[in-house]
Length: 353
Ligand SMILES: NC(=O)c1ccc[n+]([C@@H]2O[C@H](COP(=O)([O-])OP(=O)(O)OC[C@H]3O[C@@H](n4cnc5c(N)ncnc54)[C@H](O)[C@@H]3O)[C@@H](O)[C@H]2O)c1
Image 1 (cartoon, rainbow, N blue to C red):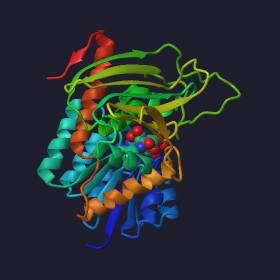
Image 2: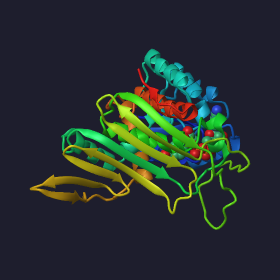
Image 3: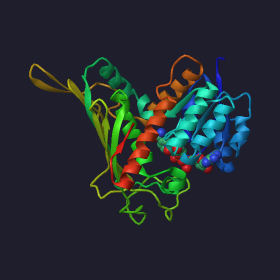
Image 4: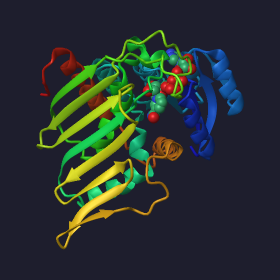
């Protein structure tokens, strides 16, 4: 097999970067598109020369010529579609989060094992150029043992509305949408330590603030401000069995002066910041050094990271690489996210066994 035929399920906002990235990859052919919204699926099929259009993903999965699918639908259908795709013998790239619950995640993992097919979770920050540079430094022990990490993704005004704000379809607010990226990238760089316990808080104090004027913010394709059943702020402390800890906070809305994005890792020999600006920190001859790697981009570049992610997926499907974000990592992330929600609702720390 020299090229793979791909189907894209869900033709909304994020599908655009999947489609562009497949289009740029000479070993991939965009073959079919599916969306509940037929006009949306047709429009993408027209733009990307896909031969087939569906509104029912089962019909797409029934095509024997398709090797792999990208799942870019709302979170509530990720597990169901991933399992159906694996059972139909397709390799799967599923957008983050893997699904909505731990129970669903375990069922997806089981389907991966049974099918022997590949499932890559869309933890796109792992594939970013700067992440991979930093990973090399960490793997070479430049930072020593990592014992603390801290990440924030705070939007002062940025509840996207629509399905994102509908608990039933999303599984939660900024924690499951943004926190999944923040927690995953720290956990990955920390060497995926085993979780000991999780303690978290969620708040639903400000609503979606759709009333705010004079300031633009990202809106979902099917924006609906009347619906908002998710938290607007979440924070958490995650303790690991090796003694390390991770602190994270994320928001859709907050009375903050400005938006904030930071990812910081601290080790015994050095530290690193991936965001807001890629920096390495160390000490030499009794002097502290802040080192600025000379790279094309000092922070996350959306398109580049997605291109790397899709290229990696295609290579993994062709059997030349192992995925960097396998299903078991998606399962672990669901355990952490769900434990944070549980801790927030019960007001106690959740111990992992
Ligand atoms: N990796 C990232 O940085 C990133 C960024 C944005 C979104 N996402 C993820 O991508 C997914 C989609 O988000 P989006 O922003 O594109 O949303 P969107 O609302 O713009 O698009 C989702 C599309 O999926 C379609 N859909 C829903 N259920 C379907 C089903 N069962 N069968 C076929 N089509 C279905 C909808 O009609 C819609 O067109 C979410 O899981 C989200 O978390 C990831």
